[in-house]
Image (tube, rainbow, N blue to C red; front, side):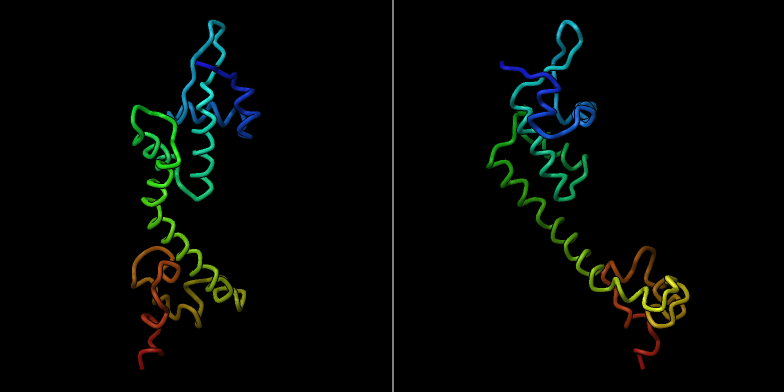
Length: 155
């Protein structure tokens, strides 16, 4: 099997050697050690590194990427068919993230209009901290509407 050194893998993949070592520690890629202890990778690891980069670029966690790579038969390199299958599985997750980012974009200017930056004190956006009744977290960014908590909107 044709092998390349970590420096060559870093150069060809555009990923720092330190990141490659981290990916290896996380079980995402693998190497063999030479008699001198140097890492050497199968050329096919280039495709795995590209897969990791593509998956990270769409916001997947290392745990999600690991699960995807572990779903491949015998730990082989992902094929175009594998990517198509996995991307279909990730679509609902990505759609939810897109929706959350769209809500954030559309509401971003509302919470800083007066400059107070306070969800508890904002008389326009969150009167009386009514959003707290809906649960923890950024309720409006999670999809709740201010009309559900604003007593003035219920009249």
